[in-house]
Amino acid sequence: MKVLVTGGAGFIGSNFVHLTLATRPEVEVTVLDALTYAGSTASLAGVMDRVTFVEGDVADAPLVDRLVADADVVVHFAAESHNDNSLEDPSPFVRTNLIGTFALLEAARRHDVRYHHISTDEVYGDLELDDPKKFTEDTPYNPSSPYSSTKAGSDLLVRAWVRSFGLRATISNCSNNYGPRQHVEKFIPRQVTNVIDGVRPKLYGAGLNVRDWIHVDDHNEAVWTIVDRGTIGETYLIGADGEVNNRDVVRLILELMGQDPDAYDHVTDRAGHDLRYAIEAGRLRTELGWAPRYGSFREGLAATIDWYRDNEAWWRPMKDATEARYARTQQVVA
Ligand code: NAD
Ligand code: DAU
Image (cartoon, rainbow, N blue to C red):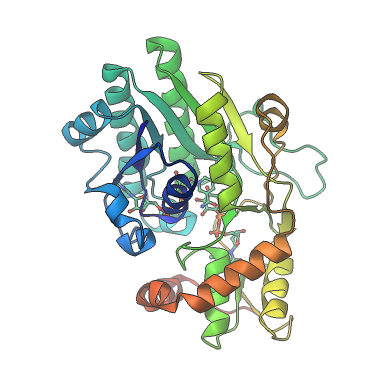
């Protein structure tokens, strides 16, 4: 089987490539990645000689057509992925997330190639802290940010291509991932690398916002489960019942790193900050038999902290520029 992995030099995509090569020797992997600020061939260290790596843009329709024509399956991870960046400049989000997805869908349609679309729970908007309901496949779309609205738009393109053109596609919407090789702009790596540097973690607002954490390998196992056994045209939510508020995550990071759990700062809140995400992954569990392997967030987080301690050469080149960008918009408030 030949699989085209877009965004395979980013966080989740590179972990997907490592997992695939470790567990599926029959799969040939081609990676298409533009190597934006968020992508690096360093994330494919150790496997670059086992993949065909193409540096290029998912919005480049002729390039995409050629690569999709040669694939049996496309797994589309490539995206502009960070909410804070989308508030500063939405334009690359529209281009990559919408135009890029459009180019892939058209190529998959022309060549009748199986397509799996990676998306996010953020398309559903947010929940109140005390809402007993979680997101399900039937929750109406209600995205908040330029990032999540472009992801929502890309999902709707996929659904239209399934219905109008019979595209053999599935969609997954996953909750917040953590694990190795995540860019230091994101919440957990930012705080872990801050603590390594002797800098206090930075909590947006009161820190009561809740995210539903899942280990990246559990996400990627679920993606393979859907590619293998998912029903064409269906959407599957991926989550591992990992709800924690941001303050508790920061306190746990500090504790695991041997620091005072109260040694963090509150900084300017994110505009339009979604309050809570929570996933009901019943369809994936009961219909397709998937279950997460990482039972304990504490253990998964401790292993992730170890990875950042052991791989400073991977994250150090991006740290200063990331913090300089945050310093332009965020002030310590408490
Ligand atoms: P990331 O920002 O770490 O990686 C994105 C990758 O896409 C990078 O390698 C980048 O170079 C590449 N890319 C960006 N624009 C491109 C373009 N125009 N052409 C080709 N490549 C391009 O993102 P991530 O966190 O790994 O997210 C991957 C996917 O998973 C995204 O679709 C995101 O919406 C989705 N997702 C992420 C999470 C999460 O918690 N991180 C959760 C659910 C869903
Ligand atoms: O839910 C899935 C989504 O999770 C994905 O679609 C996105 O690609 C991914 O970036 C992530 O979005 P979030 O906005 O939830 O992730 P982020 O890591 O940016 O922030 C997580 C929470 O932590 C959020 O409530 C904001 C807060 N935060 C973030 C940073 C960077 C802080 O309190 N301090 C910080 O320094």
